[in-house]
Length: 241
Image (cartoon, rainbow, N blue to C red; front, side, top):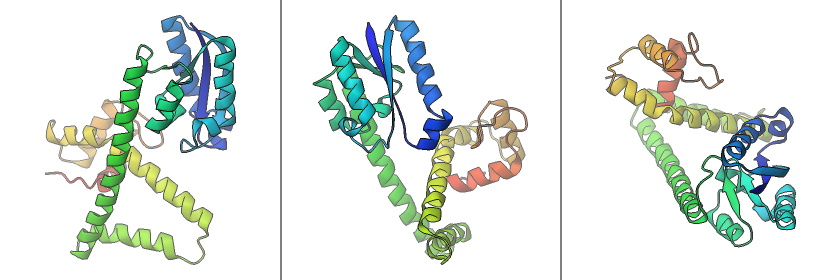
């Protein structure tokens, strides 16, 4: 099968450094080998996922190349094409496409997956809002950790010398750190609930031995320490029994 590869990274820095792009290329190369695809060409956008596919220059070029060569569009993951199920549905009417991480999925399955992914993002947004409301409620009730979090947020938004770009960068950094922490929630809860881990050092050893990467991407012996675990638990608002 002839395919056109389409890649998308969200920032120029990611595009320049290859961060994210190399992983997408690896996914597609592996799928092409596995499925016997012939990659005719590739196109890369440096755009936010919130921008419609048909408004991205490289994506439009990739779609045109597919029509010209009678090829199938291939993306590493579905969200590289779009996070909006309406966009996915519209594209399905004009071009055939495949996803490298699930190369045997048909159009119907991809549509269902897109719908479920969009629903999950809605749930995450709602949980985030509810979490902030709960945090404020605990702070009002006298919880010191919650008060500290609220104060840090207040300071970040009100300190006069902080300009808008700094605030945005700080907010993005915080969101990314929170998302990375959320991704480890199940692992941490399993360690505490099923493996009866009750100390910071023991949890650090568990994460290291399990090969779990830190926020900076380090994994293995010495990657996690007691202080890092303490910060992780604080972000997740998890306490030992």
